[in-house]
Image 1: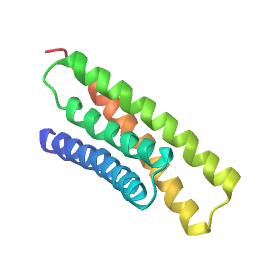
Image 2 (image 1 turned 120 degrees about the horizontal axis):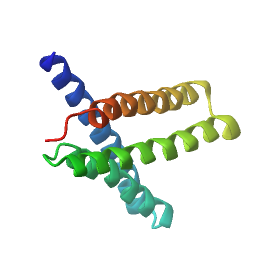
Image 3 (image 1 turned 90 degrees about the vertical axis):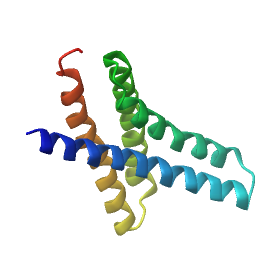
Length: 123
């Protein structure tokens, strides 16, 4: 049981960190190509999941809980943006599928992490 929990924890941490790195690199490349506020916002938006992932592994229950709530808010915001982009912008089929998979995985991983943290015993 503990091994499975560790695997889920590592997959979750890798998922959020990888997502933050990709968004940050995308914003950084955009900043180098042309200075625009949108790319600076992407750079900062990519740092949020990385920081919250680091804080999620803290020993203190309150900090873990706060970081999970922030990741839930991040998931809600990105899911709204992803589903609006798919519905309104009508991207190519492969792009829409990738965005829907990312949005769905964000929601599923956030639900699994929430159950693990919200129902954990306070230390």
